[in-house]
Image: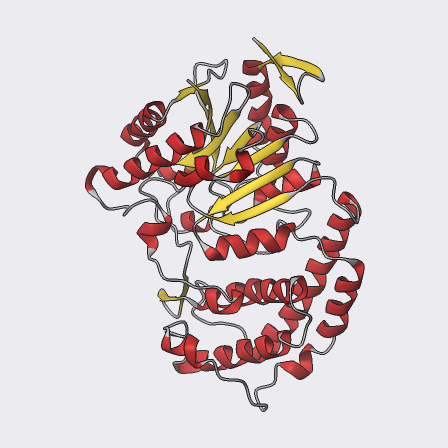
Length: 397
């Protein structure tokens, strides 16, 4: 049956044909690039090329798009670029911070303020100069594993950078600079046994700032000084979707998301430094709070027998999501499994109990894609089941 975009402005081909057209975009293995997508490599982010294709095929300018597990904000950035309104939820303050930074278009004046400030980085980060103290963060454990051995230099350098960031105007400028620092520190520390020298770190911080400012200027030129669409990022659970006022007046035309993967180890809230020692430093840099463990951010512990907690939370989330849909809403998900032989069936059963029905793809097989450079997959073997993701299409029953 044909479906229509944008309240019937033009008729599209049957949905099965549209899904088949997405197959090529789903297999796109190009590196993440363009717009503000490279601001911070959030774990398990999905391809903006696929997101763009899905948005263009299932929506029209002015439609509303919803991502209930927004993560690093890929869906919201592409919605902004394509003139669609968007809403994103996440329970992780780090994901909220990254998504808000990526979708907050700086003015030309704010951009120039940051460029002027960035030119003085060689003065701000100096091991011979003092650094401020952050007793609350230290007492809260945010510096754990970051003040031993040679890593104390990084704690000091990051603190010096944060001290200098406080000189910037409050709001988007400080948020942007913190995001550039977050990106630089992650590249230097996360998963590294031998971090680069402080002079190299300082140089990369400046390079990241200027490249991110160039990307932001390009996004501003693409969307206009006054973007054509709205973007709202909220800290809330997907299981509370039906309580959100954003959906009281209109329903999302497309729900495009990548939920936590069942049984797959993903660290959304920590970096691993100095031999896989976890640190909550990302929240210190982003000026956010971290008070929860891995199982909270992934819907349940990955080693629980039968993953009962995960699937219970998944069902509750999509039961709420289904309540903000209407018959014109299409739900597109990208998900991977540690053991797809049984987890995929249970996943689909959970969505069915939540009030959703899977759409046929027009092919005897579902749409699977290779995982492109996911951090959680870095130490896995290429032939493991979790090295592939499946793209699922649903509507309300």
